Length: 213
Ligand code: B12
Image 1 (tube, rainbow, N blue to C red):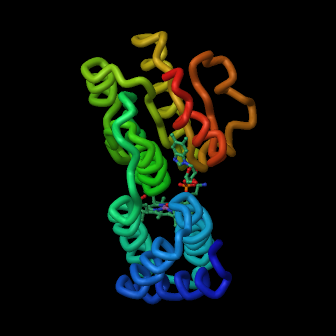
Image 2: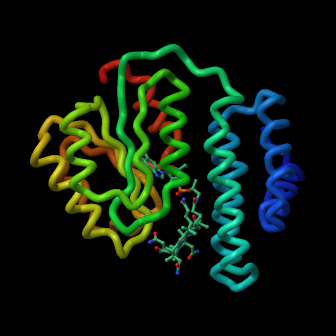
């Protein structure tokens, strides 16, 4: 359980660009026995959403927002070394962003949660060309493909990626997430049989633990 004072200390340090203090807070939470997903959602994600609003309202500069995002990325990258990972479970996932969308911190978190539970993961990051994603799926034949989609202006690129994956690999199971999902008012994703769209950590955990993959 993350105390409000710890969250506020973290947010403040993030805005100030104090990487050392952010790391200290992260490490002390991990040492206190806080779950990784709790730290991801209730500390880092919560702070980044707030940073986004502050940037939108002109309360912080682009430079400050960039530092906050770099520190968060760094913490997510080192986070697994503070937790015990399960032995390999024989399942694999490729997680990617879409062309022209740089937002990938959430997908990094999701990748790490799979890795924590013994999945073999390949994280391609944001802004990955579709043809390279398709090639990698062809060669690695993962149990699951994860796609993150953040900005609504990329909706078409996102749908093109889904269309190509599902037509070239009709049995491929796919999980998609990211803030872009909230713009899908027409429920365009419902027609894809093998696609699950979710930002719920509980649902993501169900995928991770489902031995059917
Ligand atoms: C950090 C950040 C950036 C960084 C990204 C760095 C990186 N490596 O990711 C940088 C500086 C590059 C950036 C750039 C821009 N950004 Co920006 N950015 C943000 C910010 C502050 C935080 C994003 C973040 O990491 N959130 C925290 C993560 C943990 O949350 P999440 O992504 O939602 O992920 C969770 C779930 O969605 C889900 N999930 C995510 N992916 C996946 C995948 C799968 C498979 C599953 C199952 C689940 C899942 O699980 C995660 C954990 O719970 C947001 C504010 C916000 N509201 O998020 C703005 C925000 C997303 N950015 C925005 C904008 C406008 C931009 C720019 C256009 C700004 C500009 N003028 O240059 C550019 C676009 C660049 C591009 N072409 O992509 C807007 C988007 C508005 C919109 N409606 O589309 C936002 C909302 C800010 C705002 N308030 O306006 N940004």
